[in-house]
Length: 179
Length: 158
Image 1 (cartoon, each protein chain N blue to C red):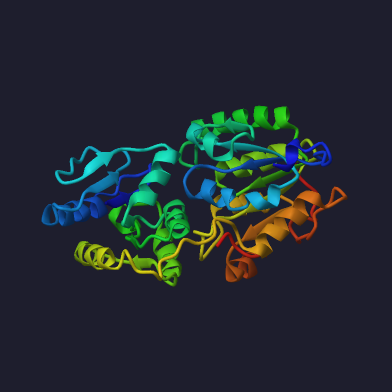
Image 2 (spheres, each protein chain N blue to C red):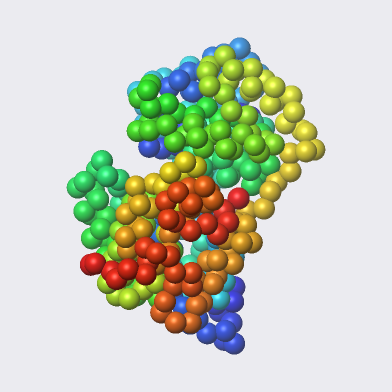
């Protein structure tokens, strides 16, 4: 099964229509899509506007390949499950988001071994086929579901610091609060 | 869970606040750091409850700077949540609701930390920039962003 997800906040037809095209040519592979609110009908996808968190986790677990906008929730879930994930970042110039931060996110996440970043529909379709052929790759292992030790230590220190003052004061926080 | 053990009494009430999607997933990756604290969550999606059970989860309406009316409802709901939990510490991974919770929690003397999303690779989010005026600690997950904005860097969720 291929799982496509574009988050719940904004529609993303460019991605879903490309996945729909791929699904039309590969009818032996079921494609499940979480589409957000959209009026578009996708003939070859099993579409649902949104799903609850446990269903989302099940879909990630069962998918052979995940196709998504460059949203961190999906990227982190895919990494934790050790799944190949293809990212198509949303573009502000096409009205797909308020700004281009997804392109920056995708560029940084491309360094991860299970992440492929694509910019257009043709690249997306060939990336799905390529990812399917390596979905049994032993190099794709599930990764830890927790933050780096350094960040966990910083949060722990912050919670347990004895006095009422910050553990690591910054210039901003040493100013008196104007409330 | 250590909370139920009588030998370790909770000495810190922590309110952890995150919107949906990536903000919530990043908050979950911090969970080992909450061990031993009396942890309460606030988020926008009721189906998140099952993922942190049995910790209490409070809900507030999602909003951003483009949905001003909902932002007001969010702020009022978060005020009720903060006054009910009376946290010693507030931790947020964003977005707007996290900033609002921090701002309200400062009024009752809580210590507050805002961790900007790892998605913000080039600049701080609007919420993080606002949080810099009120939170005790604002973290970016990218060293270069921290350097350029006066935020701190202490590692990342990945």
